[in-house]
Amino acid sequence: MAQRQNLRVLVAEKQYLIALEVERILVESLGCTTAICGPALETALDAAQYDIVILDTSASTERNLQRAKLVEDNGAAVIFLSSYELVDAEYQALKNFPIVGKPFDDDQIVEAVLAVERSIYPAA
Image (cartoon, rainbow, N blue to C red; front, top):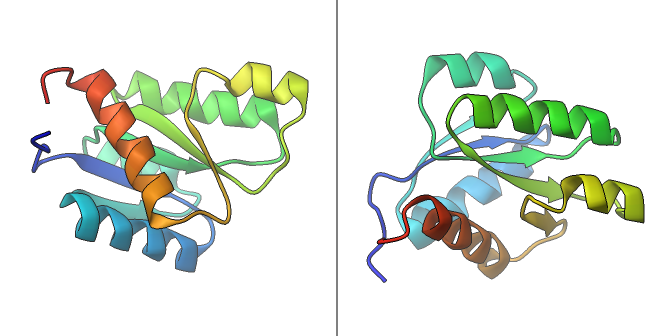
């Protein structure tokens, strides 16, 4: 599969070392253009256009859904990174989004991004 060289990914992760690791995986494995933001998601979305935003989950399902809507309203797809055990109600609320558990390996991040890329750009 030919990969899009211009796939733009924002990593919105509050733990900077985890964000750096996700960024490394995206750049080395997929050649993505990346940016990292901590809690300043809205500011980052206002500053640039992204294809995919990788969001760190919070303990609040409502907050996760609000952040996902903000991302989608800005024209990007969402992938969640989660260190939380999702109970049935939370899983049902987030089931329409890819979720990568922490800790993760390179392949899990790559597979999630490629799956979302195929949904955004079916001919890619």
